[in-house]
Length: 276
Image 1 (tube, rainbow, N blue to C red):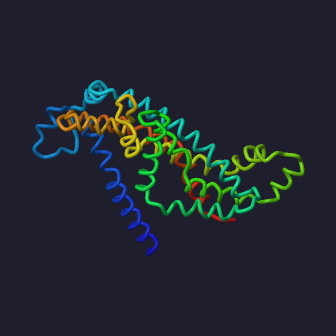
Image 2 (cartoon, helix red, strand yellow):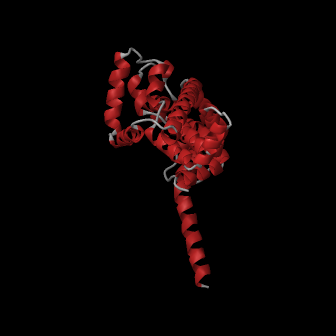
Image 3 (cartoon, rainbow, N blue to C red):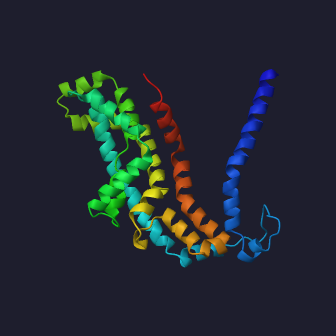
C-alpha cells in the first residue's frame, strides 16, 4: 500500500510538472491561431478559442522574409554541424587512442578552455573574424562554431570505453587508423554521435548572440535574428498572434527532430556518463 501511494504521488507530481513545462508551448500555439481582433478584444486571457485561424502564419511569412531566414539558418546549421563532427571525431580519436608525447597535457589544456567565460571568447572571435575581413559573410558566421571542447570530451570518453584489444586486433589485420575509426569506433558510439549532432543542430538553430554581433546584413539573418527584427520593426509588438505564429514555425523543426531521435539522445547521454 505504501508503495502504491508513493507511486501515485510521484505520478501526480510528474503530471503537474508536465503541465507547467508544456503550458508555455500550449499558450504560444493557442495565441498563434487566434485572430488579431479576437486577441485584442480579450479583457481576460482565454485558454481556448472557438474560431482558430491560420492567417497569422501567412502574415508572418509575408510581412518579413521569414522563408529566407529559414534557408540561411538551414545552410548555417548543416555546414556548421558537418564541420564540427569532422573536427571532434578526429580530435576525440587522437586523444583516446593515439599515443603521442604530451597528449594528456594537451587534453588538460583543452578542458581548461571550458573555464573561460563565453563573453571573453565572443570578444576574441569578433576581433579575429573582423580583422580577417569575414564580417557579414557565412564564413564568419560558421568558423567560430566548428569545434566544441565539451563535445570532444564527451566523445573521447566514449571512444576510451572501447577495449584496446579491438584496436590491436585491427592493427594486426592491417587496418588503418582511419578505417578503424569509421568502421569500428563511430558505429559503436553512434548514440553519442547522434546526440552530439542533434545538440549542435539545436545550438545552431537557436544561435542569436554571435549572428547578431557579426552581421548586420538582413540577407544573412538567421531565424532568431529574424524574430528580433519582427519585434523591433513594430510588427511583432502590434500583432502578437502573428509574432507567435512565426515563433511556432521556427520551433516546429526542433520539436520534430527531438521526437524522432529522443531514444538516441537518451542513450547517448546515459552512455556518456557511464564508465566501463
